[in-house]
Structures are given as structure tokens and as C-alpha cells.
Length: 503
Image 1: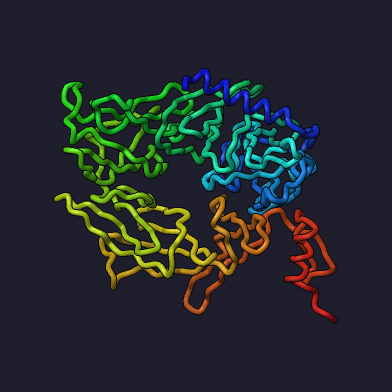
Image 2: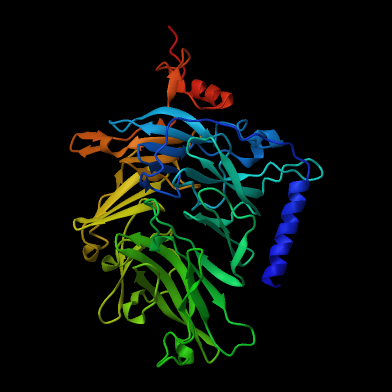
């Protein structure tokens, strides 16, 4: 199918859905406080994002099954659960002047999704309020929106079928991947492009990445998306091609000539099929991990897992800078700094893979009490601090020397929280010395201040979570408060769990 026909088909489907039974909704809202659109943005594309002295965050995880009629997710009428909040960060780090800035459910099944902020706009994803001919809300269609950071203006960017579509927002475009095609919808500070355009078709693999920190008007190599394409079925070439794009013209990184001499095709054993694994941002560039296989005499051979660091204004592949990190084809990696190898944490066993100068693979064991969900790895000269979740608890390990790891020599596993963390949806977000997470009991966003943790002889203080959106007075609970931005049903549950003592 040609690009023109595919776009026409998508537009036809969108028009049909748009024309189906649905009421009108007003986007009038705010203003919600003041804004600081020129300030740096921290932790973009996550559960909680900071811009200057303001924190924007999702008020919990709601279910699309709760949208039974269009009004359930109308702007201004949607449940407070799942809406986007805005709080001012006080001098002591606490949150104040909290209000709903986007009164609509944030939702995506893409667990690497989140909200983004660029300049004066918040970018987010929400289930559509369109219905079919039977009046059933089509919640598997997601709408991509932006709302001013004071809530006063809202614009729809596009609508896409699929609740788990991979996507990323940049400061000038939405990029998303569906049906083997990579799409783009561009926008400026004032308007949004009318239609989606095709960046690439017949895409076989996509690796999304984005800059965590955004400085207004400054592009970053961290915002490039990487993808692969196979050769035409009648081609005599083996392997595939690798590209990168930030929404502009795709940059060819790898093809059949990459490992060849003098611009000629490489030999068959060096025409590789790349499988993209992970992208990790560092202060001086982006590390991209991938595995490679070749086909020789009809048999597939694994070359191993590799990494390359891209820096500068745009990616450029240099075979001399390729680093082999494992002889095996790894599928899940935690970046711990290339000098330290790579961590693979799995249910079976966890190891740090290290390649010696003699091309020998060494697997250093790293023991966890159960299968960890690794949240992040802070790499410093003193070592590697891993933060992860096991059995809904925030845990920590400090590895001072990966080469010294052995069955007998293991870093201590430290339980940091008494709070229950849900790590099955959007990952907990580390912002301004705090960790924001979906609470496992109520499914709202709670936070813990990491500075409150103590782990000293005879003095251990576990972290306890507080709801991010704040509390109000109540004469029905043990401490005289109740979460302010909670549904009535969830408040009743909270009161039941925290009843006032009988006199």
C-alpha cells in the first residue's frame, strides 16, 4: 500500500469514528495558577514532571472500564482520579496550591508513556469519548492532546486506534508507531498539523527514546527514535537497515555496506540483522544497545550484543566505536555504564555481563530476594546505586565493584519503604529528591522523600508515602485528614482503612 493510500485510509477511519454518536464537550478551564514556560523541564515523559517551581503529575491510575458513557471522560467532567494535577513546589520541597489542570483521564497501555511539558503546553494521552452505533464508548481509541499549563486552552493533536501504541512527544511533533508504520504529527506553539504524515513504512522494530530534561528551544540527540527496516523480498542482501529520526528526515545508520570495504557490500557474514534492545541517556550522549545476527549458508549465527554511543547533533554510526557487551543475544538490559558491563535482571537469575579483552564473556552474579523491577541505576565514581521494586517495596543495592561480585560477595539488599508501590503501569518517577509512584492500595499517585530514609545501626526509618495531591480535614479518620482529590467511593475506602478511634 502506498503512503498516500494508507493516509487516506487512516483519515477515512478517523472521520467515520468522529461522525459516530457523541455529544459535545467544552474545554473551558482555568486559569490554574501562574506558569513558567521558559523554565527547564525535569523528568519529561513520566508520571511526574517538574517545570521551574511547578510539578505536574497524574492523579493516579484509573480504568477505562469506568468510562461507560462519553461524559465520564469529558473535559471538566471526568473523574479526579487519573486527571493531571498542578502543584507549586514550596521552599522546603513540599507541594502547595494544588489544583486539577487537565480534568480528563490520562491513560495509555504503553508502560513507557507519560506526560510531557514543552514551553506553555502539557502533552498527554486520553481515551476517546466517541461511541459506536450502539452507544459504546470506543476506549481502545486514544486521543493525543495538549493543554496550556494553566489549563486555559486545549487542542487535540490526533486520534489513534490501540490502547498500547508506542509514542513520544518532542517540542515540535508527536511520533507514534502502529501497523508497521512510524507516523508524525507536527505542531508549533500556536497550531497543530491537520494530518499525520508517514515517516517510514514496513518498519520491523522501533526503539523510542527522549530527553528527560528539556531546555526551551534546545533540541537534543536524546530525542531520536531508532527503527529497523527489512530489505525487499526480492533483494539478495541479508540483514536489515537501521535508521534514526527525531521527526525530520531519517538518518541511515546501518545497511549492507556498513561493515564492507570502500563502500562495497560486506560479505554475507557481516550483513547483520539488528534487534534494538535499549537506549540510555548519559551526560555526553545516548548509548544504544542492540543484538546482531548473520545468516551463513542458510544458518543463523549470533554475533552477540553490542552498544554504541551517539553524541553531537545527530546520530552517526561508527563501527570503530562499537562495543561488544555480551556474546549472548540479550533482550532486556539495565544500563549501568559501559565501563561496568550490562545488568540483566530476570526471574531465573541476574548477572552483570562483562567482556574481557580476550573476547571472553564473564557473568558476575547479582542476587536479589525476588525478581526485581529495576527503576534506575545511579552511576558515580563510588559505585552503582540500583533502585528497584520487589513485592511492591522500594529496594536499594549499592555495587562498589562489579568485578568483585561473586556468590559469596554480594551487596546488601536494603528495603527502603513500608509503602506499597504498584510498578506494573507507569514507572515510579524520581523528581526533586522524591519518588512519585502509584500506590498499590488506592491507585493514586503518592510520594516519598528519599532524604527521610535512615539505615544506621539501631536506627532504621522506612519511607512512608503521602498522597501527592494533598489532604483536607476530616472528622472520620484517625489523624483527622483525608485525601482531598479522591473520588467519593475511594474516600469511603480510605475512611474504612483509617477509622477514627471510638471514644
